[in-house]
Image (cartoon, rainbow, N blue to C red; front, side, top):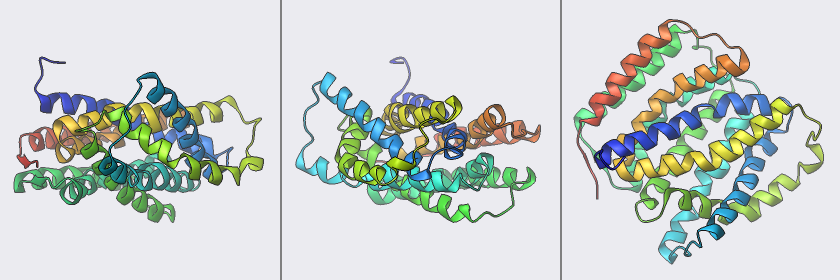
Length: 293
């Protein structure tokens, strides 16, 4: 990996994170079929927080500075409470493939958040290729029959906004802290509130749920909420939040593949064409300048 440039390393780490995140919606949809959405959305964070505590103790992590703690306290709003909870409720009614399409605007939202949080300044050419990639994803959704509007779309849009700011904060913090340390400390900070929230639905948890439901829950807890951020945050820190954030355009295709394999949802040949189009947009956008402070 050292033979690659810092930006290229960022793209590689970011893409690995996207692949992990791409299976989140299909796994969540399987889990909410047998578990309360609040348990799936926040219970996964409780399990991830336990892993975070073990990790922080294992590496004997130094406590964050006061300024870092102030920013870490804001991270849970987006990627620990907001995104997991809103997507869990959304997956009760909307297909995972449809949800993946709505999340196609997340890269642009992340770029906007990077401007506000990390003071990155993408060039005009960056915005051009970013918007082109987003339009490709939206066009694919319409042509693939995903134009139907669900009430859950409002939840998903809220999840996009909150996740974008959570990603920007995490990516910015990861420049001075390890990527896994950022999500770990954020989980630890949020753990008291998470525990209280999950306690309200403790008696409603279906402990005799199928292994598919439990496996899906464990996936979103261990991979989506913990391990995935190790790669994602490092990628954002190395390659820049705006640049690496564009790799999320591939997430819809990972989600569609996961939906087909796990849920039996159909993938059409047109998917490959748009996947290539998105790859071109991301590749050309990578060459566009983004000023980083």
